[in-house]
Image (cartoon, rainbow, N blue to C red):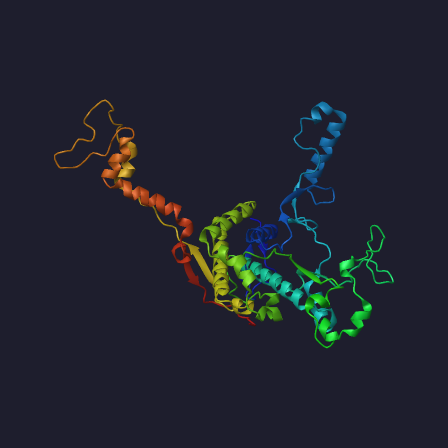
Length: 436
C-alpha cells in the first residue's frame, strides 16, 4: 500500500501519528474541494501519466523498451503489433515524479514576503479597499485548510500576488486646456451652450460657483483617480499533507500558520458566509463531496475503505465546526479553538419482512383461475394477484403505505439535518504540544 507518512515520528517509536494516501491524491482532493466550494484559490490539479528517459526505470523496463525499438526498426510488420513502444508511463507529480500535475501560477511570491514587506514598509501596504479584498481571500484560505485539515500550512506554502499602484495614462491635453481626441488629433471645441463669458464670471463671487474648500479631504475615488488601485490574489499550493484519518492527539498539534496573523482575529465577513453556509448546511452536498473524493482516492492501488471512511469522518467534523462558526460569526482564531469532532455517517439497516423474503420462492399465480383475491374463512385476503392487481392488493393489505413512505424517505434524504444524518463524536484527547 502506497502511503504518505508525516516526517515527524513519535518519540517512543510507536506507530506514526498520521498515515495518508499518496500525497498527489491529497493535492487533487484539495483542488476538488476548492472547485466544489467555488473558492478559486487552488490552481487546477489533476493526475497525469508521463514517460521520459530521465525517469527512474528498472533494468528490465529499459531492456524491453530497447528490444521493442530495435524490432520495430528492423521488422516493421512485427513492431506494429506491440501494444506500446518505449518506456512505460509513470504517475508523476511534475518534478517529484510521485504525485499530481498542477498548473503553474505566475507573478506570485511566498506569503511571508509580502506580509513582512507590508509591516516593514507601511507605504507599500494595500489601501482599505484592497485590504477588504485580501481579507475575503484569506477567509477562503482558512475555510479550505480547515475543511481538508491541512497539517502543513505555513507562510511559505501559500502565495500572494500583489500588483502595486501605477499611474493611469490619460489622453494628451493641448496648451489651451482643450481635451484632444487621440484618434483624430483634433481639439474638441465645446458647443456654444457650454461657453462662459470670462468677463461676467470674474464679477461673480466664488461662493456662487460653489468652489470647494481646499482643506476638505477628498474621497477615495478622487484620491485614486490618476492611479490604479492595487490588486491582490491568493494561491493555496502544497496541499499534500491533508485529509488525515484522525485529529492530532499525540505530540504535535500541526497548527495552521495563518492563525497568528492579525487577519485571523477578524470575524468572518458576510460575503464568505453567503458563499459557504448554504453548501455546508446541506447534507446532500456533503455526501456528494465525499463520493467525489472516493473516486479520487480510488486511484491508489492500496485504497482502504475503512481508512477512507475515517478520513471523511474527520472532514465532516471540520465542516460541522466551520458551519457553526459561520452561523455565529466567529473569527478564524476562534474557529481553531473549537473542539475537534468526528461526524460518523448513520447507516440505517433495512429490515425485510418474512413475507417479502419468501415472495421470491412462492409459486407463480394461476392467471386462468378465479380464486385469486377470494376471502378465506379466516377473513384474510390473499395478496398474490396477477399483473397490475398486485399493487392494489398490497395497498389493501397495508403494504402500500410502507412502500410509499420508503420512497418518500429516499427522496427526502438530502433534506435531513446534520443530527439525523450523522452521529457526532467529540475527541477529548489533545496533543502534548499545543500553543493556542
